[in-house]
Amino acid sequence: MTESLLELLQRACPNTLPMHMPGHKRNTMLAPYLKTLAAELDITEIKGFDHLHAPGGVLQEAMEDAAVVFGANRTFFLVNGSTVGILAAIRAVTAPGDSVLLARNCHRSVYHALALNSLKPYFIYPQTNLRYQIAASLSVKKIESAIAQHQDARVLIVTCPTYEGVMSDLTAIIALAHRHGLTVIVDEAHGAHLGFSPYFPTGAVAAGADIVIQSLHKTMPSLTQTALAHVRSPALASEMQRQLSVFETTSPSFLLLASIDGCVRLIRQRGEELFAQWAAALSAFDQKASRLKHLRVLGYGKERGRNLENVFGLEPSKIFISTLNTNVNGYELAELLRNRFSTEPEMITPQGVLAMTGMGDTVFTMERLGDSLLAIDRELTPAKSVKVPLMAPEMRITVPIATAERAPFILLPIEDTEGYVLAENITVYPPGIPVIVPGEVMNQQAIRYLLAAREAGNTILRSRSDVDGQVAVLRDS
Ligand SMILES: Cc1ncc(COP(=O)(O)O)c(C=O)c1O
Image (cartoon, rainbow, N blue to C red; front, side, top):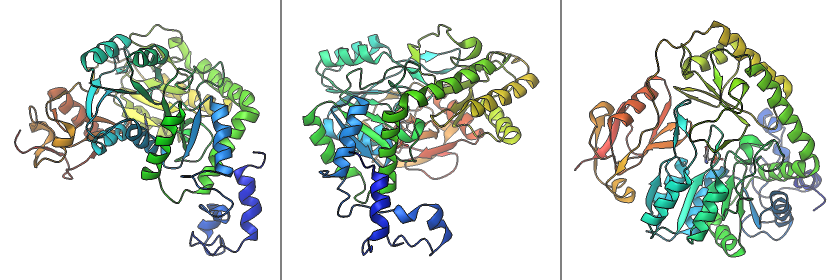
């Protein structure tokens, strides 16, 4: 397709009388916000602009072009984030009641898909890295034994990279799963930029995953909510299309679709140059990071090239700054960055701060981050004692999720729930990974984790209870 979606919008919109949605009618004189938000180009599906759920025109062409760029058999544009891709993908490869194998550190949307389809999950916990106190790579051996143990599971769902940029050996994992006849879905929400330049590792499409979901908006220059789903076989693609039409809006924003198209074209036309610029910005940060005395940055500065326990690999767009070796915690570091250097991190944990980079970063932004960290670092002192690891807990599940999440419940203060079976999903945001899912038995490690997150002011999302400090447990547990 030669004309971009944006060019098509710019050509068609001013000349047509819009007797259709949206109600602002592209009249930007109505209110200033409409002008600022580009309402003059804001349309949904009308003649000449194709249908996202039954593509056969410009959208089909744009998606085919994207499939070529990303090396996929079929690519879908998504306007409800990776979330909708994950819901549709899981639904596309399972029937109600099926068993699935999944990494326990999957995003909450995966858990919502389990509940929607009454799936029976077998969890595979990622390994941990104690130097950083983060979830590390998935062990191929653990996956192998889970496959052997749960032969009724036909689907494997994993997240790679993690929020912190930890990679797993996807090539080995996917080959193993395929040898056993499993379909593999990879949540690559944080890795839409992988595989385009030697500076970043290759991603899940190249590793042979059956369905790969990517949030274009997280790392690439595309508007918030834009994402892609790549599918490996035509049969799976037909089912994916059907399921997307269940979960995704019937009024897709063409501003979002034009943004996806623009981003794909940018990669095709200027990818090499722009990935090289991003890499140069990260190298500039690396030089600053090498002068840090107390803060440690995963994969950067003095930590670059370090052999990390249970870590198969790292992708360098994520900058995870560990405070474990210092007299502050992640929340305090975030406050310093926010208040003194007007810098807002992506994610804050007791262990550190995640600064997320994207293609829009420059040597200037990355040096500014590096200089801010150096200024803070000069005022820090070493930790007085070894900090007690506070990591997402390992849980035991005794009641099926689908049963527990609908069963009668009572509310109890978090600190009094040890031994009770949880009746709801509890997620600390970010990273949006459920700490507890319904049917799991509360333990001391989970209680400590939740209390620390609450004290630090993190958002704790609960699916059923709404009383501060209390959680829903099964009435009969
Ligand atoms: C691992 C992972 N998967 C999926 C999602 C959902 O992505 P989106 O916000 O694009 O719907 C997120 C969001 O943070 C995520 O971290």
